[in-house]
Length: 308
Picture 1 (spheres, rainbow, N blue to C red):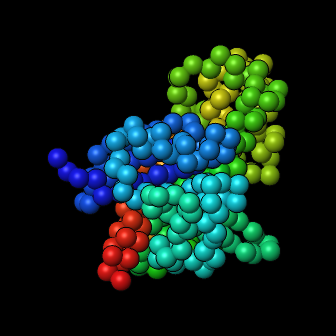
Picture 2: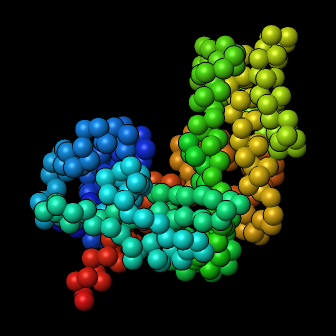
């Protein structure tokens, strides 16, 4: 049986993912839970991690590499930031070691944009970028990374030049649950109303300043024309994503199109959105990207130290 070499962890705000990995990058075991930073801060980061390590029977000597919100100021150990313009290679060199643990546990830093006019931060996405693009990818890439807080990142020759965060996913959750529009989406089933979604994307992309008005049409169309709850849900989603794309697609788009790092339903929705606008995308699975990034970082950290 293949021997494990290290443990990789993607520790988000509300999610936890762990992989037991061998030296060739093959995943030997996997764990997923809702014990993200918010939950772990209450129960204890070390306790949460140890429970999952025990579940996959990770040997006591096995090192652990973590990316994401465990390295935030309110996380386990603050891992700091690499400032833009940030070479992705610099992320590998600034991992913070968790003190007081017998096991070697490192947390990768995030990236900070210390621009007074456009301050921004990312944690976890830098590891996906590393896995998706590599250390020294030549040329320019425009990367869209959907999520609760979507990121749009410009990378030039392996250097993160600029990025922007959009609270698209969080806004969808709030608007669909905490406003009058919750009545419009109540009872929505799993039916995909692609036509309503694409129409909303186009309308919001063409007139993002009317976003608040366009959102309300999810209810008014239902009251006046009998639109379904599923159509209302897709109108909300399409409007918010369309507004995001209107900002994200400002400026030049590389000839290769947009690098879309996403998984699951988000990958499907954003591909539909880009298709509605006739924008070419290069899809990259988000889970694979973060695993590759963690694998590259693990090899750089422990191989370099073994050779020093």
